[in-house]
Image (cartoon, rainbow, N blue to C red; front, top):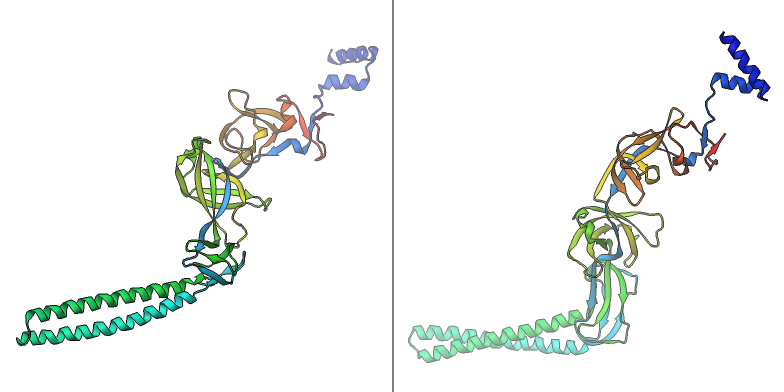
Length: 371
């Protein structure tokens, strides 16, 4: 009876305009044609580093910086460093006219010689009078007078030495020197200028270490602590990432912006970074290797997030448990549901109905299509 029924069905299909091939397909129960997706619509779950933490932005500044100021007044005779020059610790940056100070120094040195002579005489006189007093040869008042003269002479010697020391320091200050090895970032004076004590002359920075002065939202302050690594990019170095560590956190937030200032130390041994560059990045509060998927592979509209996995040539809906979210790379850590090596559908391919046969087309097949 079964062959007869099949024959009847073939005759009926032929009568209705169908072909033998159509009839055979119906009899054999052919599956629907698979949906073709391009390689751009799939992603493979992989183990890779993932981090989380608040975004930061700010400017770079030298970790070590000093403004060299004039300690004496006078005209500048010469300068020995230009902006951008590298200088060694103690190197002479400029010379201030010290002729008046040298006259004062010579007077102070002469005063020390005179005072030293007077002090020596007073000391010998006191010693002689003390011996005479022991022998009863002089009155007590004469001994007291010798003691007062000795004290006065020693005081005058100390004053003369102090004046000489001051004059020597002023002569030394006439040669303006670098406080440490670094680079001249600012030169504010030139030969012929007249400076007064306290006037800024040079700014020296040590380029071997920079700091990032950045801000984080107060709501995310709990994710930042001293020692947390930071990574960032800077203007002028596209595509290059720099790193450092948080060294200080401000104890107060800006009431106007709600931001908290942080400082991060940045090694700069090759002197690639310069002060003043704008930086954007993130403080990495957590970081680990884990199965990672792009954010556009996860559907968050249901009660539990899910992905569309390609398995056995068909799409299947799989609920997943998510961990860290990397805001910078727009990726999720997957704790459960899928594993490294699984293939997921992304983008337009996420609209495919679960259970649909799927095949991957050539890399340049951008649209989801039916065969």
